[in-house]
Image (tube, rainbow, N blue to C red):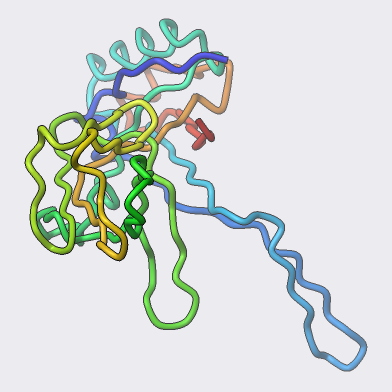
Length: 211
């Protein structure tokens, strides 16, 4: 199973529809009370890129991208304009946006994460596909020089260089932009140019993958 480190055309993704999905079993008891069980520990995002197709040129760009990925076979990066930053969508990413770990004097690697919620049951989402050049790291609130660490944009893991490993008790935080790893959720594209000219939206389903 391969992953291509290439982003789906951003201009098209800006008009797409989609978002996170969870799986929850709900059993209604005879008393009317409910028992609920989460089948997935993590949410999974899905999108329909067809809503972002505005022209025949866009359609041809999608076809070329689809063919190069061999349909469902290869994953790729997807820009989700509604959730693509460590900060709020309208904010600017800063080095203290997300706490990604606590130093112990020996741990050198820290995976990027983004937290959702704060008071009741915050959800930590692993960020595996940060955007190159966007990651900023801070140790105890002080921005660390880029030479102090290595950012792996394929895995989302930050590795501190020898001599710069965070000391015990030091909070490690990060700010970043990120993409979502996805694949096409169909091995077939239904393209109808006559329907497109009359306002029909082609279905181009995408689904998030674990990498």
